[in-house]
Length: 266
Image (cartoon, rainbow, N blue to C red; front, side, top):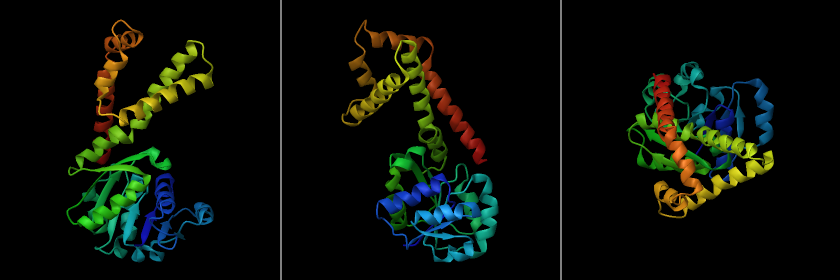
């Protein structure tokens, strides 16, 4: 299977490295189309696939085309590649906010898969939600999911609206985690810990809590009850959080991100 990645930026190269690292493809079957001349030497030095300078050089050879350009560049890209598109090619888009209907109309083909990866995909710990048009076959969908899973884990959703929801949860989610971590690090600093000590305390606590969650069937609420003994320190913190409506604020923040994702899509 020949794979063409259009866009040699962070996410495009995250996919390229993941495919190559997992031996799911070879450099002979991987092509990278990048319009910026400045990036060509850097991409060629990676030696993980053929670097193409024009769509004419590679588009017709591809079975799967991954659209990894900025959303604002999509219209110009569609116009340029449309005359060369084969309706039997499968297109995987990781462009935030660009709907499958828009892509199909832009390129003149209907086999579209839309995915929302997140930043931890760079280290193989990503979370991706994806959906597809009806024209994508079961075999093609499984093939693409196997590719996506080289960057972490994935879930398929039937409703494209849930891609916007995933943008708000898993797409933006790492920033929420780092926001909370940063607050705890600052709290630790104020209590007297050095910066390095505070970062270790917080990062290992997050990592341990997540691993413990994965290795059990307990819900978050059940784990909280196990930690928060009556009259103890955890209960005091949780009571303070409830007084400031932190739980609802987090939900409201995610909803704000969801509404913004829908606005960008429109």
